[in-house]
Image (cartoon, rainbow, N blue to C red; front, top):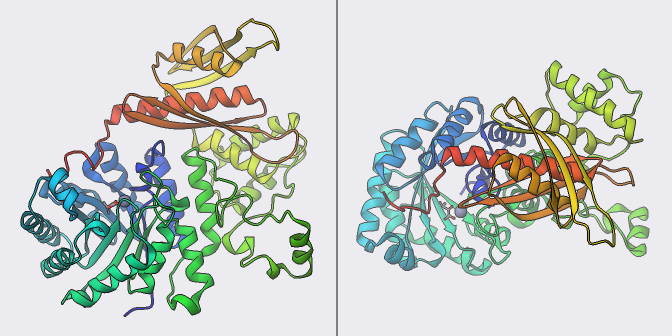
Length: 519
Ligand code: KIV
Ligand code: ZN
């Protein structure tokens, strides 16, 4: 058995199914490039049959990715498989990933198929995919709640049909580590042709066990793990790539396996994703949270001063965390900004550097210290967030509120709707509510605010405020992010960002793979 674990990243497919984590094509390309820098072996770029937007994104990623394999997901039907192949066929290393559910509850209620019919569909799907490429992965959805001997039957049949990777998902995050490890061992020992395929796992985090289950599977012979940056994904998410990888890297004597990940790219990758999907990383998140390397108690601080290893099992630098020292100020020149952006991993053209530089100068007039996080925030507001398709842009916002009176708060907003300037004033129960009411009226939106969070981009009293909002409009949801020294302006920017994303989503009419399960 090989001692190399294949790292299969599904941030762009299962991760994107996480409520509000929608990415447009440019966002996805940016994440894909970062995943290459991170050294993942397989990028699952999307589910091409889900929508035209998903198809285009998978095709574009297949065309730019150089080293990693690019996989497209497909239900076990010919139409999905044809569409997946159309999308991935230009990749240097294309993969078709087809799946069907194998648990009694899914077969009976969702698929309305007998076990015999499911085996037949799985085999037909794999045989169809193999006509396009020998790199075919088969997943037995809800495997952890499937009958073990039925799994042996399905897996044996699809390997005979040509599948070279067999994925065993814990779709609903129900498995326990010992039990899941035992299932993997049982399959490898009892599937007669198991040596012809790589066994893979794909664990969800409903009980907080996704990483533990994935590691238990590796201990028992799995040699591919399907993971997401920061553990995003359906419901409670998927196994966190950064946690899984650092466990393998820090405990080689325990796991006895390697992976090809460049661990210094872990934090940059998760940070980029957090900016793109407008979702802050929780402070206590292992490896990447702001508290992961912070030592508060006196005893711990004393230990750290004497020897870091008393309380740190890895250095922040090992996972690519940079210091937040002051780097750039009011008097810094364009070259200093360009150099620092390059050090932070941003490859920008001259116009983009100029845009960030101008915004930095403006910010430096109001704020004494410009930190790396401020610069990154400017890259997002000045470069990455300028989607060509954006319909609405905030030009001006002012709010008025008075404490202790019964007067409602007021907001006045000026925005660009395509090329037209529109303006309106209105009321709300507080200044943010007033601003959002006015923006909604100006944009003709019926979206409801589901979540609102505020964070400081850096420390200090003059920190920029970063606001993230989560909106719902019928079946569509979107998150938006905005940063500014004025928290109300940040809120207005975030709201408009989310409305623009909702517009994109509604026009793309995305379907979920859970709808219409087989055909
Ligand atoms: O969770 C799951 O079972 C999946 C499959 C499609 C692999 O995402
Ligand atoms: Zn999944």
